[in-house]
Image (cartoon, rainbow, N blue to C red; front, side):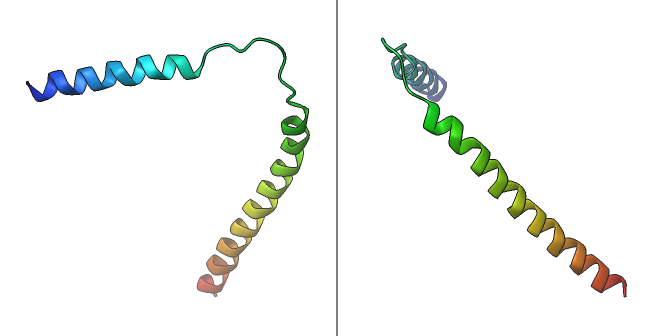
Length: 65
């Protein structure tokens, strides 16, 4: 078989199998723990980003002096 046909069949197979993974579930799903953890994750992410920027600024200032 041609390489392009095999790649196409692989892509179609991946799309078909991904559709089953996203099937709607019956009933309700409790997402309160995920929602509550979102604030904590955002705070930690902001702190890590601030430390990263601080290190870059410190290195930039040291190089300038």
